[in-house]
Structures are given as C-alpha cells and as structure tokens.
Image (cartoon, rainbow, N blue to C red):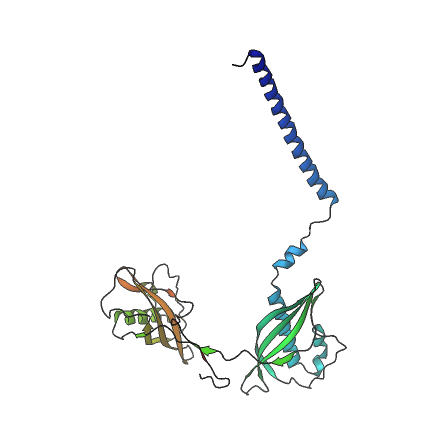
Length: 306
C-alpha cells in the first residue's frame, strides 16, 4: 500500500507531465505555423502550371491541330500560302494550285499516338481521315494522312508535311445472338411496334410502353415508323405473359419516313421486361448481343462483302 508521501509525489509528477505535454504540443503547433508562414513569404511560388497541364487532354489538342493542318494543306491555293505558316515554317514553301485541288468534308481523327517524350517536348503521330472530292458532284473518297506533331511549352508545330497512308481496314462481320424471330401477332411484337410509334413519331402515349426507370422521352422526329422485323435472344410465349421481372433482349428493325418523305431503315437493340403484368421497354441497349464463340468474318477491301 502506497504511503501518503509517495501518493503526493506521484500526483505532483503527473501534473508536471501534463504541463510538459501541453508545452510540447504548443511548441509543435507554433513551429508548424511559423514554418508555414515562412514558406508563404520566402519559398518559391506554388507551381500551378504543372497540375494544370496534366489536366489538359493533349490527345484531343494534338489531334485537332493535326486535322486543321491537313485540311489547310489539301484545300489551300496560291493565295493562301501564308495560312500554312501556322503549321510549317514559312521558308518551307509548298507549290500550291491556283484553285483548291479538292473539296474536303468530315475530317476526323483516326489515331493519336505518342512517339517520343524528351521531357521538354513530345512528338505525336496523328492519323487524320477526310472525305475528298475533286469537284462537288464527284463521289467522295476516304483518305487518311499521317502528320507528326511536336508538343512543347511553346505550342504545337508539325515536324513534317503529311503523308498519305492506308486507312483502317474495312473491318469484319460478326454473328449476333438473336436466333428467334418474333411473330407479328405476338404481344411482344405489338408492344415494340407501339413503343416505336410513340417514341419516334408525334403519336404520344410513350409512358404506356416503357418502365419508369427507362429514362426514355419521345424523339418525335419521323412522320411514321413501321416495325418490319423483331428478333430476340430467346423464345417467349406469343400471347401469355411470363412471370413478373422476366426479361429478354431484342433487335427491332424499323422503317421510318422522314419529314422530307424520305424512307430510312433503322435498328434498335432493346431490353424488354415484364412489369405490372405486361411487357415494357426497360431501355435501349448501347450495343447488340454478340453470339457466344462467334468467329469474325473479314470484309474484303473495296467490296463491302465478306
């Protein structure tokens, strides 16, 4: 058992320890505050440029510059020689025609690739696709040009003139996973037909065909919309309604007539679900369902056919 003397000693020591801790804490805060104020007054300015540059989408910046330069060169005439100085040195004179050599439409950025990073500058390779015609009534031809672009703190500059290169291949076809053709007299077909009419024309009553969470509102763009074909990922009863919550993916092929009375065929990948005892459109799919273990069929260049 502690004596009164030791009890008094421990009490006094505890008080001194608390005072010491308080002094240490106060001193630490003071040092931190003084250090911060010293940094504000005497240290180098905060670097705001570096974080800002990292936010900039250089890919889009470089690609847009390259696209503009390619279009300028393809459409330039002798009277527009100076306009090319924004892309290439003014001393690098290019022989230009008296009138624009071609009509260029719909320029696009096909690829942007970082080729070299020197620290103070970056060299990018940009492939620009354009639709070219020698005259207004001529058939357009897709052409691709590669342009090297130097990015630095001074701005953007092309390091060479563009080169005509091969455009991306014609791609490949792939089988989709919609093996069932839905009968025209089925409830599912009737539902999708009603949805397309209320969604694409001014018929109205869209809420009857969609779920509250679909997020769909009327487009009301076309004079008419006729469902030509409906295929689905699996078979569903023609007349009977499945259990609540049942769903199926489908693709609707619709023939529309524009406001200028022009015919047009469109495809809509859909998700349908049973809600409140009836089929409803749950939403438009962003892409169709590809068949499992599907094999690609390359399209032959220049033919558009496999």
